[in-house]
Amino acid sequence: MQQSETILSLESIQMRFGGLVVLDGIDLAVARAELVGLIGPNGAGKSTLFNVMTAIYAPTRGKVRFLGRDVTGVAPHKICRLGIARTFQLVRTFLTMTARENVMVGAVYGAGSRAGNAAQAADEALDLVGLSARRDMPTRHMTLSDRRLLEIARGVASQPALLLLDEPMAGLNPTEIRQMVDVIRRTRQERGIAILWVEHKVDAIMKVCDRVVVLDHGVKIADATPAEVVANRKVIEAYLGEPAA
Amino acid sequence: MRASMSIWAVIAAALALLPFWPGAIDSYAFSFLFFVFIYAILSQAWNLIAGFGGQISLGNHAFFGLGAYATAILWSGNYLWGSLYESHPRIYYFDPVTMAIAGLVAALAAALVGWPLLSKLRGDYFALGTLGFGEIVKVLFVNGGDFTGGAFGIVAPSSTFDTLLPHYWTGLGLTVAVIIAIGLLMRSRYGLALIAVRDDEMAASANGIDTLKVKIAAFAGSAFISGVAGSLYTYYIFHVGPDSVFDLDWMLLPLMMTVVGGTGTLMGPVVGAFVMYAVFDLARIVVPDYHPVVSGLAIILAMLFLPKGLARIGFGLPGLVRRG
Ligand SMILES: Nc1ncnc2c1ncn2[C@@H]1O[C@H](COP(=O)(O)OP(=O)(O)O)[C@@H](O)[C@H]1O
Ligand SMILES: [Mg+2]
Image 1 (cartoon, rainbow over the protein chains, first blue to last red):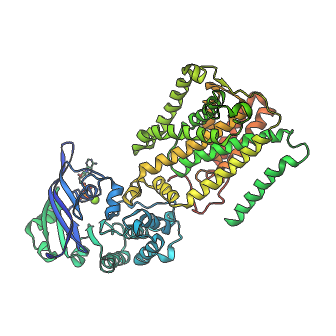
Image 2: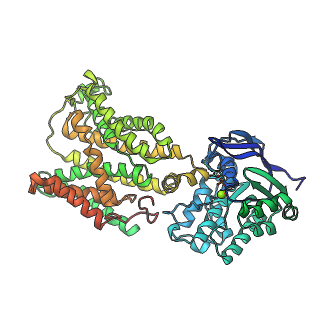
Image 3: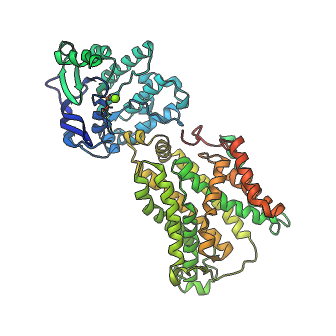
């Protein structure tokens, strides 16, 4: 991990909405093909951090660097074309399209758009998440689980170097969760895509990730291997202290 | 899909041959169909930005009027053809260059107002902004002095025509051309982006789509088509005045026709234009005093019983209903 190339680095990111400081001095690095978990109690600022990385918000302070470039505040579609794909906590698929058309959007307009053969990229991405059989199904008829998988496929089809997943397991049943873990693992292994994975279900993160980052009230309180993080006193307090506070 | 398209091709061919039917040219049906073509073109234009693009434009009548004025001004001022005009006095009549410029003037105006209005994520800015734009343009033309002919407007130099035949064929040809162009467009990568923007703008931009560019292009395309329809109307009406060509009806009727026919479908606007224009015209003839009531009722009934429109046919991407 130490020797591999850093593709994303956040430098003392601060995000403030009016008087509310939601992110405070966040430093974070992700290496090529690394699988990093990002956890923290509700309202810790995880989704906001994603929105800063994908330029939905411009941070009030700090820099986002990706593949050696300063991409702070660059337009969201350009961020995608540079190689950062994402999913949303509240799933955002194109509901009047079929599954394959959804994935084609990523393939045609994403980072891989110049590499040609969008159709092949789309079909491979559908295959990776196991939706090939439902490729012609209208998205509005799909289950939540399939829509979450579809969002991942759309991101993969854009051929990113980094994929941001915002609670891909929320609302899924145990079978679907197992399937999702498998897809995330294979996305990294078979495609070499680095993944930053926000999840509420901490146990899944701990089992699969190379490294886990913990946010609490907009501050990074841990950034280490899963084994180190579960033993971290601050982390235990943030989680166990939550109901009492 | 293929089967339904060949049905449309047969209908278009039959309409093209209709003038050869004895007496057809002088029949009422002939001028009726000419107006159906104008409304079908305008409905296609509105459907492009609102049905496929999800951006409700309430200013499309302004583009119709701009196209009509551009044609009348180019023609009466002889800005294009110089001395050729003397040797060929009918040179402006259905002149493709004049009609294309009419469309381009409208498209340029759309790009200029679309830029600020479409930068906002919220659609109501666009709807109200375009409505305001329509009013502003009308006032500008009323106060445009000699160039626009003020409140009276402009009368195009040639003030008679022997037959509606060129109007009919041009109208039919443009309707078919617009359908084919939009059909191809919606199958292209641009069409994919437009639907993506309509369905979820944030997801579209997160997947590499320059949403502002896509929306402005759709708006400019919609304006271009409306402007060409305005140009066609000038060749029929000759007198282009602010109260006639900037009338809100040039936006409202195509809007209703599209909604009744099927928003976000390829053939819906055409079916809607035909059906609604027939209803309006019939009401105008049969119950002249009550025709707004009858027409209004027809619209309400259509919305109640056909919420997805009359036409759900002939389009590759399935289920293109209004945005959820
Ligand atoms: N646009 C916004 N305006 C004001 N406050 C916001 C905005 N977006 C997020 N927040 C606040 O930021 C905090 C962190 O939210 P979020 O990033 O969604 O947390 P998480 O994803 O970790 O649950 C919350 O208190 C939320 O209310
Ligand atoms: Mg969140």
